[in-house]
Image (cartoon, rainbow, N blue to C red; front, side, top):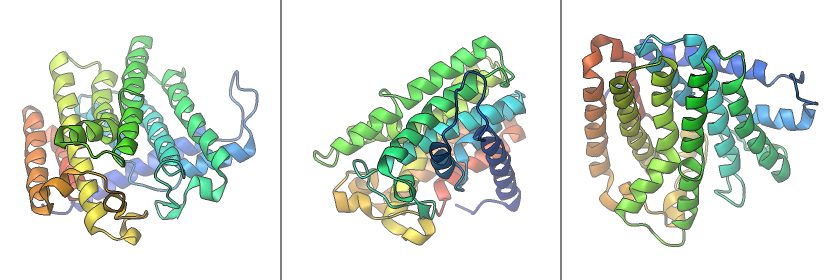
Length: 304
């Protein structure tokens, strides 16, 4: 698989900068309507957990899925910001000593290291809650019906039936290794659910027909599987400096992964298959889907 084109890299970076600008403004010090106050220490920890770089891939998928179907770019940016708050909350909590116990995230100290454990917990709680604030706020230019659909879809992707449930299965896997079907379920929940939402959200924002919604949801499921498979490969082959976090931890903890079950060569072939299937789902859109297709290739071929 080839590296991403300069055009794709520039588009991804531009989207990340737009998202960070919005998030920085949303996480400003001024209390909003019906807020009593924004404690400075807590807000600083929230900003540390969110405004610390990263590819911003999930919001990018929201934006590009929306653009594919001619939906509102402004709405997509705000929904992407909400999704990134959920994603970053999960990272803040995932790094805690009771979870994966990491000191480094995106090359910087994790929130509980930079602040303290209690503040990190509250920062994560606040980011999760704030995500739904962003979706429901009057500044998000969508109908109440669309906002309700997005709130429901994001809640289902984030909670005990999605990402949080997947994290619970992941912790259990340290004690009792799951079989292959169990690993696939775990990964579809822990990693895949938010990526699926990112693509499905584009269809909701664009008020798409059922067939477009189905294709984008299925596309999200394929690239979600590819993302986790690539992540497992990187945990095995990349160094901590390239990743911006500790590597080799899955093997050290005895966690079952598809890479551990089938080997690196199988994983590389499987990534090619998933990307091909993702591309096929978007074939009816022709050249309009070029950016999403390249995103699928980028996910499978990423180096960090």
